[in-house]
Length: 524
View 1 (tube, rainbow, N blue to C red):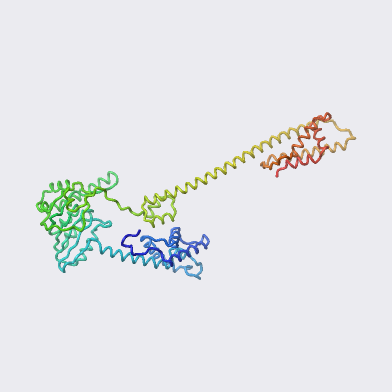
View 2 (cartoon, helix red, strand yellow; view 1 turned 45 degrees about the vertical axis):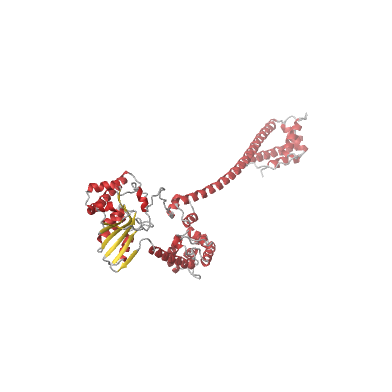
């Protein structure tokens, strides 16, 4: 949500900007990858504009700054339609941010925000009232510092300068203190101002605010107001060396504060330091008696009550003076994370994620929580994919094991056939020569031996080829099984004396069986 001061400003992209961004996405998608312009952030911005999603005030300022920086790109070749190289990368990037329509809209938003900032500045609690040409007043009604809602030395100087050259100035004070550095600077301005300065403590001048009023020519205190002096305090992190430096700096600041209190009151310096150590609270009468204040006036109504929870020696009666005695610690205002902080905290995040966090003004903690959700979702998806891959790998391993088993069986079959062939060769070599009148039978045996050689070569080739699963046909006997069955049957005949005789016999009975058996053993 935008700040209250921007409530009247419409941060929803107009239709013309949305149309330009949508067209830019289409134009970029139509280009080859090597010629596409715009960054991932620019693409994400175009999607946001195309969907007419509200932009934050900081995004509106970044849009204007982008167009201001890249307006020179419009002069490059390829930016205008009809030019060589159109659309150039610069043209694509320009259009992703809404093009000319987006530029005009961003400038309008920035003008409206600047006007709202000026108005808010004018309405701040630091108000200057010129009561007369020779009389003026200025108010210190805020904590001292440079943060939001605090009075800085720079702002106070602007207030004094706006007074002109009055002869007398009244500084209305109701402040809980704050930054010692800023307070010392403000006190110096009051001390050096040529006008006669009266400090009027209306509610409280606490901590560094008590030092500021010491530099006025005259100090007047409301009858129900409080003055408090103490030693400077700080909150820090670091090593012992850094703590020693900080302690030394605070001692020097305390000495500077004690100088001012001593000069105005004339109290012994050791007594001043003791009062500061004790965090001394004083009523108007007590402050006058000690010399811190010159006079008192009737009670006035402070503009706001003061937060004194940081102090350790607050009198109970202070509550009756309208001060805040908070029992709860002050709530810290969370700071929106920067791009660098988001990327550092969320390693590996996308540009779209960074943009989404910037748009929501997310803190580093919020961004990290969102990124954890994204990572958890991604991890769940990856886990599911890994499980699926594991199942696929297991199925492949089972199939591989089955193929290995089949391959081993074929190797055993090959070894058996090798033994059978060796036995056949041995019997052939030992056989007696055939009679001359059996030339035809001898020729037939030579053919059978050659066939056996071919069969051996086929088996050797098969052993070097990765086994391939053959579909099993239920109820059909393989040629190899028929061949082996025929050999075994032949060996049972009384006139068959050897394996060679059995092969010859089976081959004479059915020559096609051996051919089918050899063909069946051939690899696909």
